[in-house]
Length: 292
Image 1: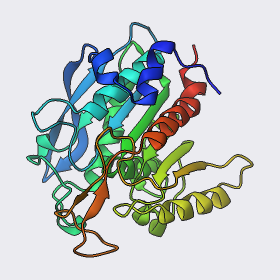
Image 2 (image 1 turned 135 degrees about the vertical axis):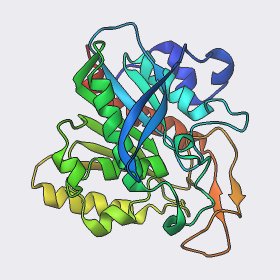
Image 3 (image 1 turned 90 degrees about the vertical axis):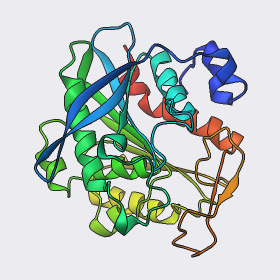
């Protein structure tokens, strides 16, 4: 198990962290997506959390369907905390906004087939983000990662699936990837051939993006890889719902479509044990790329 700096044990334990740690200096940046909507260039907005270290690894953080901001329009707590956590381990972090540049603020209440921002769009955003990072002189392009949550976790799968032409043809691939409670059904149906080692973290009680398809995807990817080390690692947390790494209590979101139980809404909220275990697992997984 890796050693975590004492000042970050609070963050891992999710006890009073917001009071102890202020957000690190963040810089708004912009760059073009590889997506060309109707022939138009989509310019993405992103937030850069850098570390004072040359040739450091860097991670793209991909938000869920609620977008990267809180109800006040500020970068949300989850994005800020993970950027700070990664900075403490010596990694740059880049939070990418895929919604507002396309005129959207959220996707959660939209049915998948009607969404104006799709996984095809977000996959191209993720690949463009890796390219932008690789051009920076303070980034080690050999140690780039993707980390995403929910809809952003699905983007991680899509952006690392070699069965997608853009991924297969991309001149640059991530060294590692992590998906928190992604929707795995689409890539399970398509077949998943990972372009990088992948860690999937799921809640067994999740009724929004169920865990079972992710277990199946991981098992089939291991078989397809033909390697001794699993290409996809998965860790599941009993009793944990969607958004288990949140500090907010569990609540029911009736306005969100539930594919398993139509009309019942979905459960969303934190699980303190799953929060701590998943963050520790994240740090263990990325440790080989974070080392100096």
